[in-house]
Image (cartoon, rainbow, N blue to C red; front, side):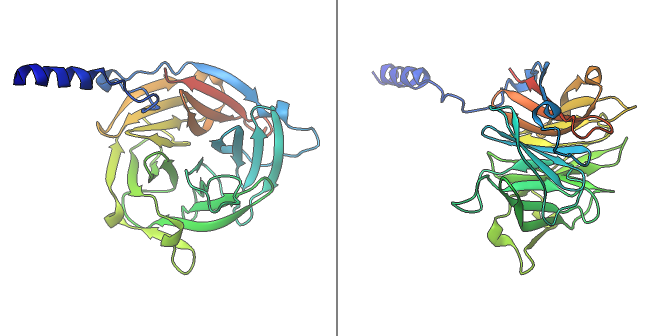
Length: 295
């Protein structure tokens, strides 16, 4: 009788359906091998009025709802409505004239009146600061600056988020040599000191992934779960998109993007799509957006 009841209970448990969309990135263990076939979404120049001047090379990409935010070198911010296929606004970020090499939205907003979740953008030069900005349709206020004061990096670093799980990562290394991702708890705004800053150290590192070869020149970065998605390269180097398994500490997929010609930059993930914005040399208006399928 006990065996019968046990068998019945086990059968009932196994019959319970898995939650829909519980894991946004398909996970197939060792066989994780998404197609990553490219599909052009748009050339943002087609959505930008002729009388709007776009300055600075295309860099970071952050997406929220129907909006795509494209950052440019020296801090120009362009907000596009992906449904209406038009530029909503273009302006200079206050207090941010950095390279803006990477950008991503967090889950939380600064306050109930905020238009977007907090925007995290990478200075990628100088102090290697991460600017935490309350972005609106016509400007943005920097609410926090995050720094890494620890060891392991040579040269500039980027910052990226694992939004779902509440972590922030530093990403960098040496061109043509090793790349390093360090994982931290995502600081809250209340963690800021009197200067509005957070200084992370080696003691704050939760995990570290070192890739000694295979990634030449890092561009944008995006983390979701155990996977890091890393665009790589600029002419005359190969243009690539890597997926790194941070549990295995290894590259598990590399997609060659040379046929797309332009330089892969910022990256974001929505559902089954990886979105990458490409910089056209000398033509900042022509930010080209592609998406790559995960399923």
